[in-house]
Length: 402
Image (cartoon, rainbow, N blue to C red; front, side):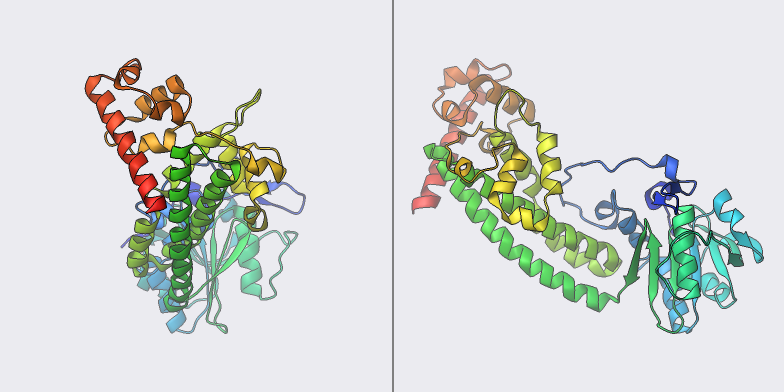
């Protein structure tokens, strides 16, 4: 079994002692982008997207050949130093040892780590390039480690931009150095325990989210929404997403042991990211310089855990005035979220309906003939929209008062 290592995903810029990015990979990096992906299909590949640490942890998760090799090293009570990548920068800091260029396997890694020195893998992780090499990183690179092996691993990771694995012979732990971070691999039982606690928390928060979302739908029908009601839903959506992101990290570390956890996460998070976008589009304040959806999402991502608890801070991220009085102001939704619940209604048609009518109340009061005036809405679709909105309105009222 080969270990696929994505060179671009695992390399990251690290600041050297002079305050400059070091490593040959520094110039090739792209800034992280907000994708707004849902958690459907959460797994190592999905959850690791955009995160160098998680991308590397996915390569070392249970069920991979690399993890098998590392566990063999631990059972053999030997240490190891493994560089996950090879280029000119790595070659320059390697002395001694011998070239191999053989196919990677867990057993070969275990045998080679019996010798003193480090093992260097190819960029894609499919081959063992060198073994028993002495790594000589720049001693000026700062390191907080005290042991020789761990200090070398940290400096090599910072200088080359490649992940470096250090297996402690005395402590019997596996440490990963990447993107300026140190991460110690735990056993699956400990990770599962933390993941199950987080999953129970997610279930409680999801129930509360469903409650406030239902309340918001009923208030929208009655045109009684305040900024506080809308912001409360956005707040809960963001809390749920952050808990889910933590669980997604556990899924990555668990590898094949996290399949059931990933299925539970997928079920709980179905549609959450879509709802988050729709609610924000419904309630972005209008003005001379209205905040865009992308700006609002970015501002929400930047909120700390403490700020997220404060409704005023969440409202400010959406573009509302940062005052408690602003939360009690009346606001009317545009209708994106409710129209998205109408079956078989394409997104472009939803956008045109919102642009034409401007608010949910005008949509609810529109006749079939009024709806047909919108481009792309014929007689059949207009009746479908009219009936769909009526059913949704009736269901929201019944759910609230019955």
